[in-house]
Image 1 (cartoon, rainbow, N blue to C red):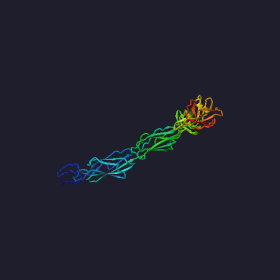
Image 2: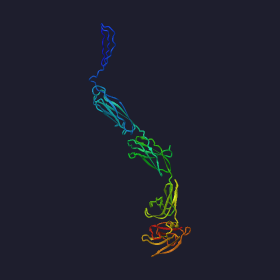
Image 3: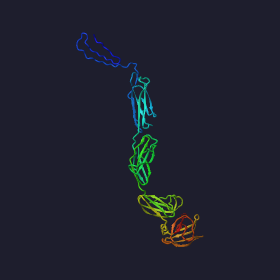
Image 4: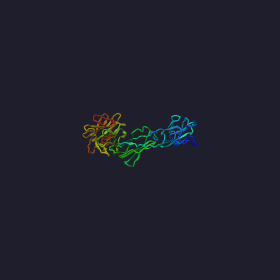
Length: 448
């Protein structure tokens, strides 16, 4: 009797055939032989969505651009044709709009492209779900989990350049690579210390919320008292705070000052150092008892000082001039005092060979003179009075540097005279012997 042959269904058919001796057949049996077969799906099987990955992660640094796009392969894992494909994005949390999903075509096989953008996102982790759908599938929508990690940038510290010093002004400049997006709280913070290693304190905050502020280099100027200072700077941005720059030092030397002191009874109307005028208008004339400080470089200088009266805001009449040279020490104050000159100094200043005549005007508008006072370089003087049509000398005398009758030179504007023939008080105008005079430069003498 021949052996029974069995078949196994439905998916894999395994036939084991043993060639046994048949009736009337002799010899050794042959080894078994196995045959496998995979049938094709039946004509009624539905399509299903298959993807190359169901979890996607993006990462980026805030302010440093968007991450690269990622692609997912979509195929048909079932029968028939997988078509009518589409996507839907659902965001977790309050942030949305940072993810884009697009299909190359609505029929599988196709490619799903995912793009994440950092615009408007703070440093954080964001999540979304992308659903892949089709109108007719066996396995319904397929969900892809998307995670986007946005990190804070490691901001490079500003590059602080060498500080420059001009007098008491310290100018600092630096460069910095800002993140691409402008923030509402972007600023530079400048710190100063008397030590290069510690003790830094904030001395300046500079808002930088416009593109003009972000131009390199950025410059800041400070006024400092004499001393040695150390500076550093950092940047605060909407995406984080940078480290500190390198430390730069600045040495502000003590100022070298020439102090001009007015010890005369009338204002100083001109102060010049090396031909530069420091009194430019009546408003900054140096009153009696006052002083003016002029900052100059150490070393030799020429000076010229004059007292007198202003005729308006900028026009003045000089009465006496003191001039000379001096050596300005470094980092300290050097004083030059303007004293009331003696009559002999006045005559010496305006050339001793001339005869100077003073006149007291009764009426400047009509130039009607009442008294005339004449000084001569030989040490004599006389006082004359005008009467009707002629001048009459009413007093003669002499002056001496050591004599009791020596008058000191004092200046004022006025038109009065006591006419008693003495030098105790007489209003005059200084005029050269050629008769040229001016009512605008009236002077007064007082006996010491």
